Image 1 (cartoon, rainbow, N blue to C red):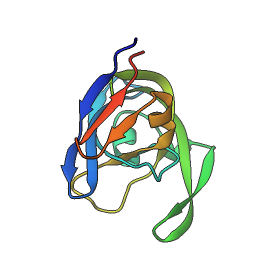
Image 2 (image 1 turned 180 degrees about the vertical axis):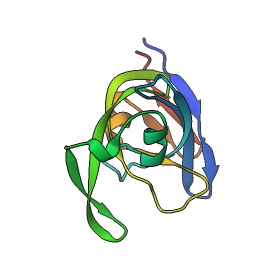
Image 3 (image 1 turned 60 degrees about the vertical axis):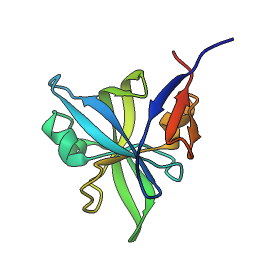
Length: 134
C-alpha cells in the first residue's frame, strides 16, 4: 500500500491557491501563488516573473491558442528550467507564459497538465490536494 502526500490549499471563497517555485536560466528563483484550475488544460505562469528569472517568453517561437476572457489569443509556451510544486520537481517543464489580468492573489494557474502528472486528488471540503509521492 502506497502512501500519499497531502498539501493544504489556501481557500478564498471558491478559489484554491497553493505555492510553487520556479527557477530560471540564471538559477534565480521565485515563489509563485498559483490558482488550482481544473478548467485549464495547461499551467500558466506570469510572463513578467519568467522574464525576471531569465526565461524569455517573448523569444518563444512556439505559441498555443487559448480561450481567454476576451476570446481566443495566441500565448507563448516555453520550457521552464525547474518547476517545483506539490512535492514534485520537474526539469524543463512546459508552461504558458502569460500575465493574467490584475489579481493580487495569484500570478499563475496550476493546470490539469501538472495535476494529472502527479496524480492529484482534490478534496474541496478539506481544502487539500493528495498526490502520489515520486
